[in-house]
Amino acid sequence: MTLNPNPTVKPLVTGFFDPATNTISYVVQDPASPACAIIDSVMDIDYAAGRITYTHADAMIAHVRDHGLTLEWLIETHVHADHLSAAPYIQNALGGQIGIGRAITVVQDTFGKVFNEGTEFQRDGSQFDRLFDDGDTYTVGQMTCVALHTPGHTPACMTHLIGDAAFVGDTLFMPDGGSARADFPGGDAGQLYDSIQRVLALPDQTRLFMCHDYGPGGRDIAYETTVAEEKAHNIHITGKTREEFVALRTARDATLAMPKLIIPSLQVNMRGGELPPPDKDGKRYLKVPINGL
Ligand SMILES: [Fe+2]
Image 1: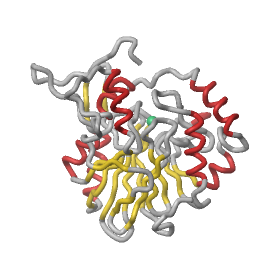
Image 2 (image 1 turned 90 degrees about the vertical axis):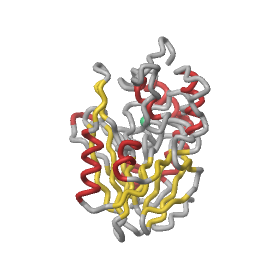
Image 3 (image 1 turned 120 degrees about the vertical axis):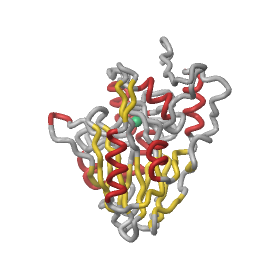
């Protein structure tokens, strides 16, 4: 059972949908002060052209400024494999601390090897301002927030509980979307099932905010649901045993292609959203490991 310090506080949550990657980034605002947090920001990339831009992040920065908010935290629910984080870019504009789960070090070790990053790439999580352990708390204005370790999709995944809202990362999708894949290095379908059960043990009325939505069946994009809705209707979870979920998840993962942006995403996100350091010519490059993933 998770102890939620502010179960009745209702933060104001604004979602920013990125159609290029089907990611939803959030501004989460304390109702009692100007303080806010940003969850899972996105940096735009035209990978074919090697071009980085900041349209999505600039929209979030403008929202924070226009509403007179103070940014206290930039939270990464995990090391995303399908989009690049804009956390350092936003931090540079608005301040705040960048936080991720402690197991980022495991992810850095795995992908530091995949991308042959050498000893100059630190694998201790030092690119982030804060590494969360399970149950750690932090504040956004007058709200005390809780980080819950919910691995399975990746080893470092965390769900962030802020008032009556939980930001589940890629633990769950909307009920008609089911769950996220568990076949990346360090992923584990059984662990994912256990993590989902942990989220579903939160009170029924808890608002759940997704990191992704793909509009299954052609429905409009949606990203907010509740524990009660997920318990009653999730197509991968409801009425399924752990064994059934693992079999379903494993069979489905075997059919999925790699995310289009996995190669640039991992190289940037394992660095806390920073591009790789400049080469001898002063320019920055991304690598493509041949048959490395
Ligand atoms: Fe993910």
